[in-house]
Amino acid sequence: MDRSVLADDSVASVPLREAVRVWARIGVLSFGGPAGQIALMHKTIVDEKRWISEDRFLHALNYCMLLPGPEAQQLATYIGWLMHGVRGGILAGLLFVLPGFAVMLVLSGLYAVFQETAWLPALFFGLKAAVLAVVIEALLRLSRRALKTRLHCYVAAASFLALFLLNAPFPIVVILAGVTGFAVHRYAVRNAAPDVPEIRSPRRFPTLTTHSIARPLLVLVFWILVWQAPLLLTRNLHAPSDLIAEALSGETNVFGALFIFFSKMAVITFGGAYAVLSYVAQVAVGHYAWLQPGEMIDGLALAETTPGPLVLVLCFVGFLAGFRNPLFMAPLLGGMVGAVLVAWATFVPSFVWIFAGAPFIEKLRDNKGLSAALSAITAAVVGVILNLSLWFGLHVLFAEVGRVALLSRSSGLPIASVAWPQWATLDVAALAIFAIACCLLFYFKAGMVNVLALCAAAGLAIKGAALLL
Image (cartoon, rainbow, N blue to C red; front, top):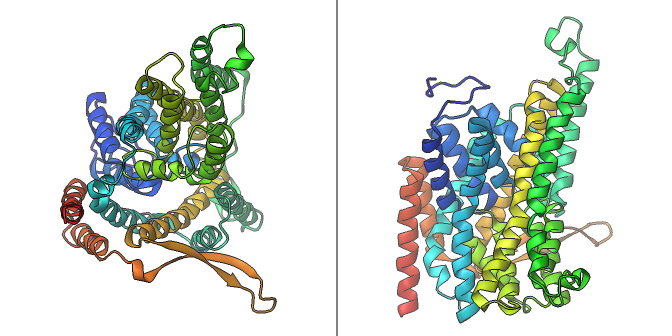
């Protein structure tokens, strides 16, 4: 296939070895949270390699945005599955997570042993400023392609305002966008003129038969069993073996409690890491005492400076829990086991959702009602990425960011709140590196790897010199 020009529904034929190299590169460079990671994937897979078309990428992204868990990893798994089947999905999903997990494992060990993370900002200071420029580039590129109608512009604006002003739950925003798109499509179908054939004859959903349902159901059961297999290991880590209830209580066997708790988290983590961090911190600190107050923020700082999904911060929790309650193991080994169990409980469900659900989503790709709903979700994603970009930019460029309440003129009561920086805390060095990254990306069209490397070196030089002084 000529990869220079792809049809709207095309997927290029690429050797698996070449795909593995590219997915490994994406995994190593996937900084900046979901917005930056999706931007990197789009730039690499769609714009540079031209392995899948824009429509296929957005269709996969729309489905992944509806799922609990890390949407960027799920998107990588979906694209890998499209290109090379189940083995391609497994490799893409694992390579997206493993580099960041390895880095988080090392940093968690250093943190647990030395309790010192002051040197980390010096390593990744410039990298964050560069990622901010990458996210803005992705936002502009996606908005040009996703905002095709006035309705899409309205949906994107409403999604941004709901998240930025009202702090609305992420799943609600996405679901409402999809419902709006579907409802507008149905209204257009009912009121369409008789001489519009494409609206008058919409495609119907495919008929579901016993055969068509049996295979996905078996896939779902198989991957759920794979997901929960470590429960056998956590039970055997405790003696005597007949005290299962005690073993899973977390009082004597922290590993069973870790796996069960984060398995529950994996099915309710809509909206990414930020949506569950407060609850996880409350349980980990207040109920189980796995962490000390304030250590969750340290873990978030580590996760912000590593590649891969931001929910890797949960592996930091697992490491400290296992390190401090290692049972019969050495503390570092206990920490590693805890981190691996949390990673398994958190990331394996992504394969469950993709391998069981993606075949249905692909079959429904030509359904006009579903396409209208998903295109509205794509427009909402523009608003989501705009909100993430603004949030990320404020925390990169300012040392202190708070929230300011907006009051009603009539009652004087707060009706919304907005993130607002302390202007005196503007980091001039971060602003300068961000401006350089924008210039390199937008004007000189420099490659992303070169931009990231140059900005990381600049940030390391600036912060390193400040630490020496």
